[in-house]
Length: 175
Length: 218
Image 1 (cartoon, rainbow over the protein chains, first blue to last red):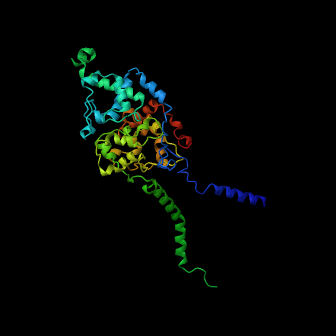
Image 2: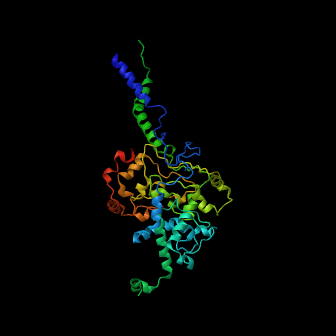
Image 3: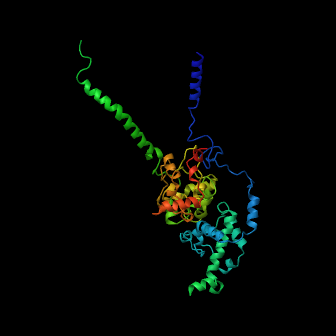
């Protein structure tokens, strides 16, 4: 009798596991999942007014001091430049990227005297805050990536005005 | 006493005997085929979106890189869908009156996010991390296919557990060098087996633990 009762209880427990539990779609929310929890259709919570990111001081600190330039930094910069900047600024920085060819306001060339003379902080500022028709890229490009991009822009600028005398190795190869 | 079974019963008995064997086998085969078909896995089904975003146009024709919109793919588990701000980076000036882009402008005006329909959806009991894959030699197209040829997005692979395991069991077959991760038309070179083994060492992957349950089910 007792054994039978136990069995029934056990079976009931087993059944309790069934029901509306869909393991593939659990009540916990995933990144950018459709949800009405905030009333705008997504699980991403809208920022309350005046919210400041916890990483804001770290971001500011990282933007204040340029990192040492290395080959790795330039490679990183090239990759990020070609992803985020080249569509408008062009792969060589002439301001003739594919989006400009399709009608976007042309940005100035990095090889203009004004931008050649501009300090690195100017480029950092434009990436961070936008400029003219260019939106801010602060949400897409981290401070480290911004510095890497600026280093690559400097390399692009140098590539137009360098003289062979500055690179004895290169002139050696050309001979 | 009359016979219980008429002569015809012999045929029925044989049919039953044959069915006892064939029906279970055929059922299992049918279930196997159906479960692996796109009807269940969702593979190769184009998903309608509003606006009808074309990877073929943006990636294929314009050459915009994956990370321009899927910003967090190297940094977090979720690759990230672009905000309206990202769309408007270009569309504030280009195709500003296109009817096709009305949902984007409405999203901007009403400050409400765009509603994309999910194309590649893993069950919630699977933990998947984009950054762990992209940073360790697995390229975008290994799972997402050649998105630069897709006018609308489709799920390129079955995303079944056996499909995941086909790579987790033999990562050397699919690993790429760093500069090929975003190449949407990468295919394994002839000496992939050798190169793959070198890449396992390069990325410091421990293949023994790639098929542990807890790698994906936490």
